[in-house]
Amino acid sequence: MTILARASLAVAVLLMVAVTPAGAETGTQTCERAVLRATATYWSCLFRARGDAALRAAPPDFRFCVERIWRRRSRLFKKYGTACPQNLWLGGTQRFVDQGDDTVLDQATGLEWEKKRALDGKANPADPRDGDNLYTWTATRGGKDSDGTAFTSFLVGLNKPECFAKHCDWRLPTYAELQTILVSTEPCSPKPCLDPIFGPTATGIYWSGEESVYHPVRAWYVFFIGGLKTTAPKDTRQHVRAVRRHQ
Image (cartoon, rainbow, N blue to C red; front, side, top):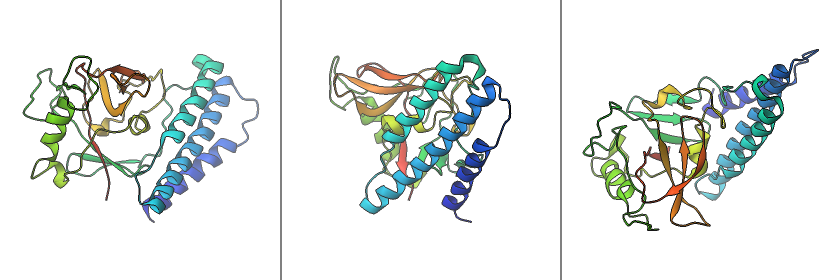
């Protein structure tokens, strides 16, 4: 069975679970059923985005999928409060695959992610994969350009020959791509709000590669401890995790 076939089967199972008669439901059961429905829709949306991108020979755009699932989950959590499961997983057990070369493949999005290491409280700028390292988006205080150490040191370090995991096209993820690997929306109960397969995750902000349209001196980030998603000044030092399209 192909990866997409298995994933489609997982979506079907989620849908079956979501429509199973529950009788007199508690608030927790009602919320969980609604979240499962939204999750199934989310997975289907990811696959459609990948399929549409393949027809265009372009990178997938997951923004619509991400925004819809977070809006739906936020409404449910607001309605049911503590009765709603806060750590309901957004995918099947085989969604993330450790490829044995310090990378993780997300079979839903087709993205390949860098695994971090050496989160011991001691930064090592010579090792771009050190989980303690911090990088800036821009090199100038109050600047707008993508000339900070996230680009000139981190990405250069991963992409210089022989290149990390034998690939030389590593980049910062888009804002939506970063959100696709969150376990849950904010507030996220598991800490960090990320599958352990991704390796050590620091208590801090992780840069995306997208700047704020309205405030170009700021860039979007995701905070994997609580699931917060917003912007920060580009000249601040934050964590990074690289990504690429899986071939």
